[in-house]
Amino acid sequence: MSNRSPKEDGLRLRKSVSSWLLAPSGLNCLSLPEVPKGLSNPRPDVIGISHSGGYLAGDSELIAVQVRTSPSRFISTLGDAYACSVFAGRVYCAFYLGEANFSEEQIEAALHLRVGLIRVDSDFSCQRTLPAPSLQPIERFRLRLIDELGLATCQLCAIVFPSPVESENGGSLFWNEIWAEHFGRLRNESVYDRRALCPDCLRNLEKIATERDG
Image (cartoon, rainbow, N blue to C red; front, side):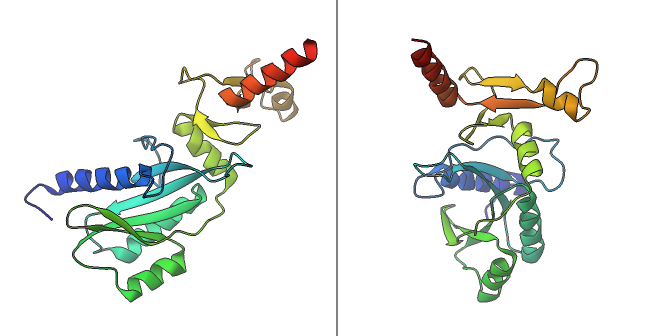
């Protein structure tokens, strides 16, 4: 790739892929939260948050990407990416190929495992060779990762937004004490069954309450 160290090449490659994920010409992700160092296997190199609901829904999708400086362990990398489908709605592998292209066999393998392919060329520009299909993550794994990323899911509109605990952007957390006690999760009067409302929904609820009181 270059005269830089493998670590430097890897960092530049990851930066290029991250920029592409955020770009409107790429996947137009809303944000790329930092992947926690303590995140257990599977651990993607990059995680993107994408709005997938359109005008009528607030659904947010987690996109997991494995980034590699070469396709030398192509099938194994596809397997690493597919493992992320336990929490991600779409999974990709990004490979530095320089002037080369993916072979038909590589594309066939990616299609079989339902993994999208991103090609990174010699000037570190990214092109999506194979779109990733929509997957069905396990909801509790998805919610757990969202929490580990310092984010929360709104109980009303389902968007993913910065957790009110770690952000000053508004929103609210509340605790379901009766629910926790019903399932035996109330310990020493401490409640961990928390839910969240995003700033928009909180403002709309306050507006509705004010209008009704008025």
